Length: 290
Ligand code: AMP
Image 1 (cartoon, rainbow, N blue to C red):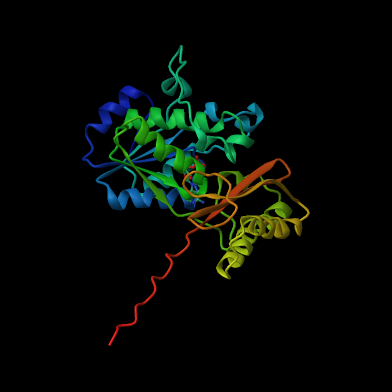
Image 2 (cartoon, protein in one colour; image 1 turned 180 degrees about the horizontal axis):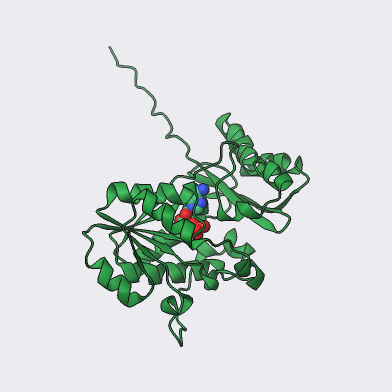
């Protein structure tokens, strides 16, 4: 496995690896969620490129950027073990060149949820992803469903800006107690970590209501709120039951929907989500006339 630090090195190394190329963009502190993305790319592509870059543009709060966990030596060992061929781990100035001033402006998909809670965050994500997609020119790029809004936005951006990379969404990887793996979980205290699976329980409570025939989005949101209220360490940022394609809040779940939530435990903010896909209404069976 090779490591590129500059655009120049990256270009030279990419040319030596067979296509199709698969790209896995990450901010490092790699866990089994990242591993699953790398594994999928290795299975589907002839060469896999992992990027490790903590993107300052997507952090509103400088102290959040400062305390983002980093361990490059360990991350490189994970990439190697998973079969990655190339890692691009650049310094900030290789991604944002001196005088940098151009960014991606997003539309309505970025207005709710993370967009409302963290102004500028999704534009920062879209901008760095556009730069990485252009620098690497991979045939496929792998993103986690864990960041469902990000996945929708990246997919939309690739279409809108004619970026010829197929955006592949991958399932959420969870700890045995249901907590979605996240680099931020490392900041949870032992009591917060023990409380954090309440996110999953809240989603499952709403899923159960929906599976038993409940179509009111308000009822599903209150099922999530009710479960979260049982956990005193959890402070809810948002709870949503939205159209899975437009992210507009629903009144009735009569089309594919995304249940999502953001919850704080002390200074650590966690997100999780679940898709609801109403099965097609059964067509009435015609009785043959005799
Ligand atoms: P990050 O390093 O947090 O920016 O994440 C890099 C990629 O890994 C993103 O596409 C995330 O959606 C994805 N990812 C993060 N956590 C998980 C997880 N638990 N399961 C699946 N994918 C994940």
